[in-house]
Image 1: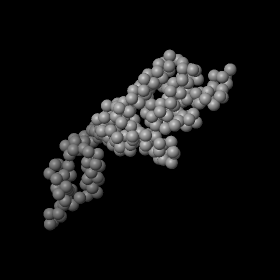
Image 2 (image 1 turned 60 degrees about the horizontal axis):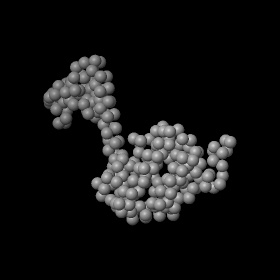
Image 3 (image 1 turned 60 degrees about the vertical axis):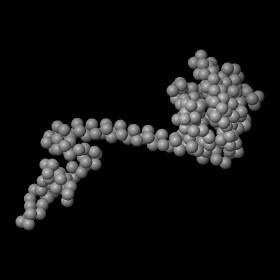
Image 4 (image 1 turned 180 degrees about the vertical axis):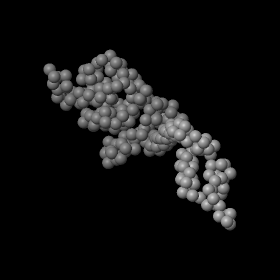
Length: 251
């Protein structure tokens, strides 16, 4: 009732009639107008904006609705970003890395914000002995350990990008050697990584961009780089197994 009185005072909705006792009587047209007001209010319009629309409904309604649609889309995107930040913050806590938030940012840099893959990986590999070993060893790393391993990863990443930019074939010696360095890096810092496991990890690089973002931050990626790395890993695994690489098969 207070809302109806307020709308009346604002000039938005006055009753068409009153009873002999002074009660407000609303017609079907009044109720339709009330429905419009409630619709616009639900979209976040102020009463002044609604009044302006009602003054020239044909001229203002579509323009105002389009403007509000843009605002709502921007707000949805903002809230989605906040939800992702919250999700990643939770996942960072689940990685087992015993560092303060400041230390994580200092050590991991951009990589810190690409850990949304962690929770699904945990679910996917929860019963894997290698996964359990990797998490246990990660939890035991000191801040200096993380500095060293991230320094290694940074230097390796620069070599990978250089090989890719130079047009080195993914099944060439340079690319396969880089794949081998990556495999040894995993074994050295996390868990023993035989070639078969390395292939599965590389397959994830192509299947899930979040997995590759843990290796190469999005800001440094190039189109086709994930597939290039995956092929190099497979070629290196074939080399270890004594089988032909892709280039040898083609010959």
